[in-house]
Image 1 (cartoon, rainbow, N blue to C red):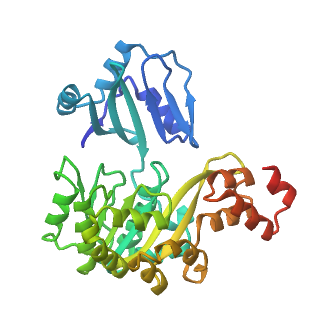
Image 2: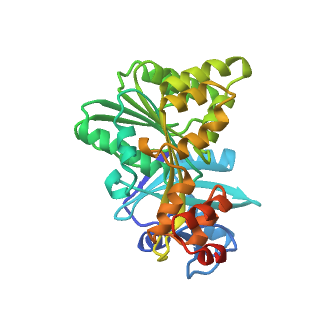
Image 3: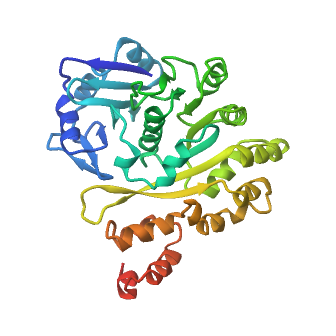
Length: 372
């Protein structure tokens, strides 16, 4: 992914400015619609006339360098990043829809937020400081996976004199060396793909390897091998909860290899953190609800034995002593503390009926729960 650093204003700069001013996450541009920004998960149109095809073509291609323009002309889509002086960095994807050009830009952080600033459970810090094994952060696009991983890398960077190697698509959060030494590699700019970079990583003396996303069996196999051979590996998956994450990793492999990967995962996995963003009760933004799995002996047994894997959900629910929690347990906590509403909790819940039962047991008025 190429990065365009703009010192002079673009014609799109006012829209990026509005995104920053409103603390939005994404900018959407398409023909025949006004520019829109996503604020607290909701797309909101800006006060601007709908874009014409000529405006969209001119304004969007202005954000690209020559190489990106050539790729866009050849393939009708392009990934790149934009850095605007005084406004920050943005991950961009340009594409054509019904013959006209469109652009989606995600605002990304220049520097990491600490885990303390993020307000995540203390067990996340414990998972981040393992010397070997694998930790996975999962959730849908836009659920804050990169932000959580950035906080975990920052904790390592602040406390451990190790070599951290990241392989990302694109690099979103920039890390300056503190106690650790950090090398960040970007797909297409610094390396061909995740699996190629992972093979090369074994010759680069890493202690910690961050893989932006595990997309295919080769990457999963290389990551599992690195975790087994004494490295600490962090990565992401687009899965909804801990049990699905385990099943997704196993399903990457053909049946003849699944027993082996089950045993490897049971031995090397340290934890899984699953995320969903839920609107705050006061309307000021969103809060991160988390499901956390910690690999205890019971979890390892459930991963290794296909007849017991279905029991992972119950083990997580019973594992609060180890820092584990299900989504619904965390949603109950967030609701009882007033951070989110009952309606928002139900909308984000894995099982709304069970959540309602848990809220009533926690002392929430049955009338309030049933009315939401």
